[in-house]
Image 1 (tube, rainbow over the protein chains, first blue to last red):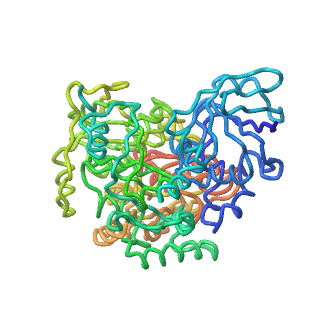
Image 2: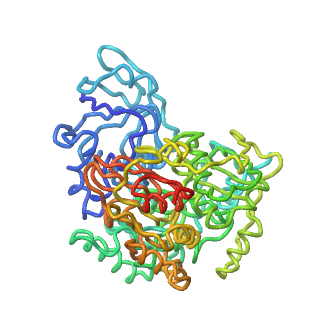
Image 3: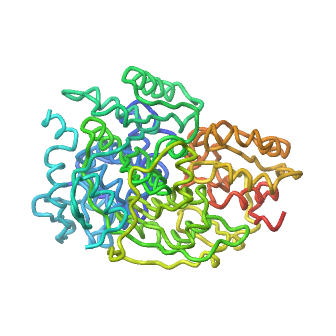
Length: 157
Length: 415
């Protein structure tokens, strides 16, 4: 079980991690500023296993991979949105952060709700209800299963 | 079955005869651009690989453009890491020479190429018919090590342009209008393809501005039909096309839009979304604290000429900071030669070195709490130019310059 942190539509990557932190030497030094403009307490309150839930077009804008990376570094288990902007979507899969499309979830949950995710079945359970998620295309699920794109690179070598 | 330009480039890069939307292909990449926004992280990951190697160092171009000159000790460490790695490995390297996409257009990109750039505005390269797409540093690293990547073939949205933009209306007004029309995710995962007679009337600077901004509608790439304007640009810069791909007559499009250029008006995108567009006239009188003329979207010589023509003999409003930032060293030198920089300086503008500047809100010209910026930059997201509670309006070089003079949003006919 993990707690939901709920956001709205068109959350751009500048909101996830602002430009002024991107050239910090490591992700660990950046992560405390995650969602600074939308929820300044996020980095303090989020616990490993928690979820980010959003509406349409999550992660639009800049290609900064720091955006999915800080979420992963804070222990976010998955981002579940109605839709994702493509660069964020691809980056998240590449680094091994599950990004899951669920059309019906956003309207029916609130921040703080406890949720359970079954990746294999493609189902989330929250407030006594089940919601079906769209499964990843097999190719992308394969990258995620390997633990991201770099893991596959090390294997090939 | 007929193919779009995007499909033809992917098919060539995948060495197959035909591709269709939804297919996943392994492609060979022609060029790999990375800048100081993420390269330090790429290097860290590279150094942790079991067997690090670069597939073809000649394909790599690394550009320090986001925080130039360096603004802090932390940035200095990241820049040094990038500089040292580039030197040790013989990677083509630029620092302080301009915004990455402008440098790529002036020196590297050619028609028919498939290019990954670790920057979302890499789609700008479609102005010469190259498939440029933005990636993160993990994708970049994989491509750097293998020379290849996987690509999901996008659907294509077709934009048929007819007519001509009216006097005082720019390519930037056109692309902001299109983004407003289709929305911030209107082209998500898709390619945006531009053609038609109207395209021939738009110069290269305008074409780059259009393609560059397509990611703000979520596009994976933008592609323009290559014509004499594009071919002449390449030849003037000493390059020949790799392939000139035109769409087949029976190419399949997810959607077709017909746009009469003469119907486009000066546009402003209001905070905090690029698709929040209105007629510039509706914003007239809005207070501003700062104005910015520059960026990979609108910092070319044509934009500086448009601004200089308006401000010549006039003054920047005493309560406004007006930043003028040529997009590259070549643009800077040309502006010097034409006397444009002198016009800006005499008017009271702050003329800066070529770089991303306040467009990305981390280095120069950052704005404070509740301040308002009008910008020719790429984005107006919340806090994009500085404090989380600040405001960015996007407009053309003309509207931005007119606003800098008036101290509030104004159109060129008002000054």
